[in-house]
Amino acid sequence: MRPRSTGTCPTLARSTRARPLLAALVALAAGAAACTSGDTRGPAPAAPPAAQDGGAAGAPAAAAAMAVTGAVEAAPAGDPERGRRLVAEVQCNRCHDGTGQAPAPREAHCVACHQDIAAGRFQAPAAALKRWNEHLVLLREVPSLEALGDRVRGGWIRGFLLDPRDIRPRLHATMPRLPLGPQQAADIAAYLTRDRRALPPVSLEGASAARGRALYEAKGCGTCHAFTGVAGVTAVAPVRPGEKETRAVGALAPDLRVARDRMEPESLVAWLLDPAAIKPGTPMPRLPMSPAEARDLAAFVLTAPLSPRVPERVPDRLPVLTRRVTYEEVDRRVFRVTCRHCHSEPDYALGDGGPGNTGGFGFKPRGLNLATYEGIAAGYVDDHGERRSVFAAGPGGRSRLVAALVARQAEEAGHPDPAVRGMPLGLPALGPEEIQLVESWIAQGRPQ
Figure 1: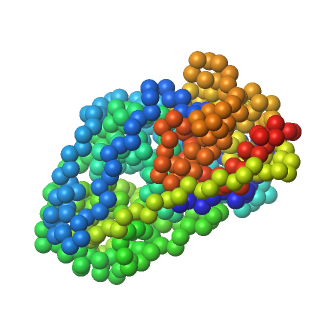
Figure 2 (figure 1 turned 60 degrees about the horizontal axis):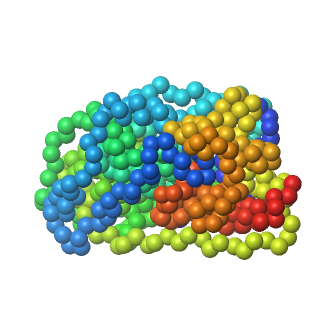
Figure 3 (figure 1 turned 120 degrees about the vertical axis):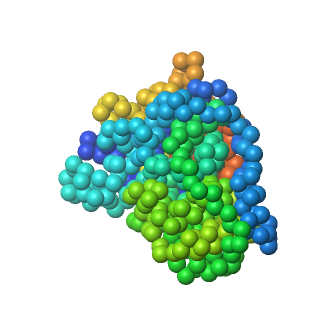
């Protein structure tokens, strides 16, 4: 489970209304349409079929690899041209390189601003840069989509877009739940894999998973990669609340548990032999190994028996506080820390009020401004153009605002609610104490 917010801004130091901070705040993670899904493309998609998650204990490498590659993926056929238009519409380039689109403007790029701040390139006073860097944790690294088709199965991309999961243990942010249906996800997957190169088939017959396991340890793969579910392998250090993502190679390294779902044997072997030949600029190092060793290592990664995933638990709700809770406290500990990054005033953000206010990432403009008491009280605009209160009862009888915060906790535990998009979108869920604070403030009549 991801670290919970602890009252310190998970993205930047608590902001003032100083203009230099704008570019880092315009659209930090992903857009929030409103506190409920309100998608523009029809009903929320059903969860995709469960991913294959483990090879049979003791199965020969070749047989297990066949089980991985031979699955029939029942899904709509994707159209790359529609996918290209969708990639532009949902603004993948605000976070990712390698989209085939021009980079987003600097002031609207969720990652470039943070990278500039961390490198001291951001145009702001030195004292401000130092203060921001002290709390700059999230969105310093994000995987490039360059040559994605040469590495990852299109079917896996499609399923991941519909049901994003945490696959990089040391990357705090996750892929957000975008307003996509099955056909749109298939179209995007077709576009992102449109230039897939034909690699020579690789058979793992005769490869040794046992030798591959020894190579895994000898070459230090566990320095960067987790391999959850495999007993006894070197494990990466767990991520801690507030820990900075300081090493791209570790932050971007996926949990190898998902490799058998994401990659074909030939893709994995080619990647192990020369990562930069597949994806120029990748932080994955080229480790000296022979083709036979690469096959052995691939056999281990793709066929090692996996223990079942340990179900994550949604944190218990805390009772409403009896002490007085004011807007000033909630704003300082919650709204100003996270929510304003996507729900701010247009004049505060050079004409862009964030995806949750003026729209973005494929979401409609919702007019939800969480930067002021009056803005929160004004609510959001629904699909019919009517103003609705975020404090009104929504799914489950909770206020829409609280329902969205709780839904994010459930998403992190692997239980997304198709009726409610969790907030903050793509960022670590608020902790029980922060949600308790918001809920208590609402229960007390939202005093200023």
